[in-house]
Amino acid sequence: MDSVTVIKHPLVQHKLTIMRKKDTSTAGFRRLLREISTLLCYEVTRDLELTMAKIETPLEDIEAPVLEGKKLVFASILRAGNGLLEGMLDLVPSARVAHIGVYRDHETLEAIEYYFKAPEDIGNRLVIVVDPMLATGNSSIASVEKLKERGAKNLRFLCLLAAPEGIRNFQEAHPDVPIFTASIDSHLNDKGYIVPGLGDAGDRMYGTK
Ligand SMILES: O=P(O)(O)OC[C@H]1O[C@H](OP(=O)(O)OP(=O)(O)O)[C@H](O)[C@@H]1O
Ligand SMILES: O=c1cc[nH]c(=O)[nH]1
Ligand SMILES: [Mg+2]
Image (cartoon, rainbow, N blue to C red; front, side, top):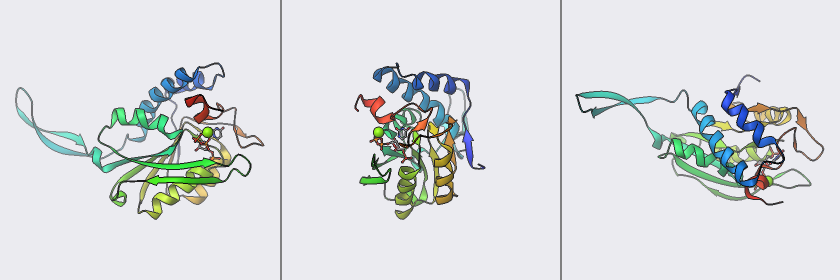
């Protein structure tokens, strides 16, 4: 699993453990997801290029490094992706945003697409696709396909939990897209849920069933 980075920072792992607990409230889950997403964002953007800009400090003029935030697109796979998106935008407020509406059919586990909106020139930008869960991979594979159809060439996928099956499927479909995750869990159960996992991320974020 060459192009998979597991983010082992102790703060990430601690917060993830609390999110996994079945007794963690909806409000607590949402807050932790937002907090953890800032830490994950830090890792997934670690090697971004900086350019030099002229600035005036109170003492002198200098050339100092700046990030070109407008060159970034965060692509959220609805609904649960929005939980990661919020914290990432806290850190990179000038990033552009794409929304991809996809849900899993509970019987077939196929990805059903219902919405797509992305900035026009995504071909010139780094696109970081976010969704807390990589289970079978069907949702993220379909989302990345759609982004590539619209011209995206430089992509990364960021999730909180991944199943080994999903990683294999995703890598087979998109070997050019590196995966970042906080954990590779044990396996998928017969309903396609990640084990031990944390349940249904969207439902836990929004208090639905
Ligand atoms: O890898 P997969 O097997 O496709 O499963 C992962 C998908 O399942 C969840 O979304 P869900 O379908 O529950 O939609 P929601 O975010 O609207 O709740 C999750 O947020 C992923 O998008
Ligand atoms: O375990 C899983 C699998 C897919 N989607 C989720 O939200 N959780
Ligand atoms: Mg869901």
